[in-house]
Image 1 (spheres, rainbow, N blue to C red):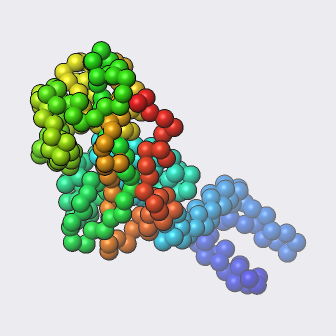
Image 2 (cartoon, rainbow, N blue to C red):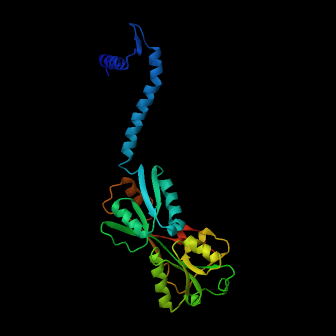
Image 3 (cartoon, rainbow, N blue to C red):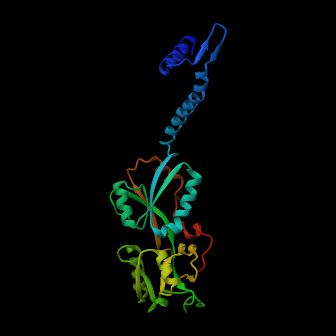
Length: 281
């Protein structure tokens, strides 16, 4: 910038502020006391303007933003810790806002735009919602530590639960697990006694610890290490029958969500072997 336009800019600034910022002589140009006081703030304003421009440019790339994530209580034990860890590493400036919801409420939240990403139980059959497998894991038996089946010298089968007190999933709030177990017991020809119907896995484990009965839970529940509860694998069970899908709107324009799907969520589904080192089975 040549000198005359620069001088005019300074004069205009002084006119707007109503103070003289610079002393000008034929031999020197120095700041007035007002100019000295104004200089640090002026520099900060320029830095903020430059920072704002850089921030705005990061939003379309998905490096900065917010993704509202719905999750089920059971998925919090398995997928959520790994998801948060990877998001912190890959997208540290993307905020994940977490909301615990059952699958049906998550799907409704995706339709209305309340959430951006859901971790739901299949099937996902809503127009405009797409999904991909996120996790497959085993169902295992959770037993009171003093239960006769807890130390059986062979692998358990579903028939071992015939006539046993079993804590069952709610047919309404936990329909996915309820249908899964009803089908498995029917195929095996086993008829347990359902002593309680509950929704959340951690509630089941509390009841197991209290000696109320046996529960069939996702293998990742073993990571909670509840005192007084023994986990045993079950033979002749379809391998990794518990499924979890990632779901989102097909027309989503949230750049941070698209980056999350590309760089954080796995391109192949996780198994419990990917998420934990070992289970006490």
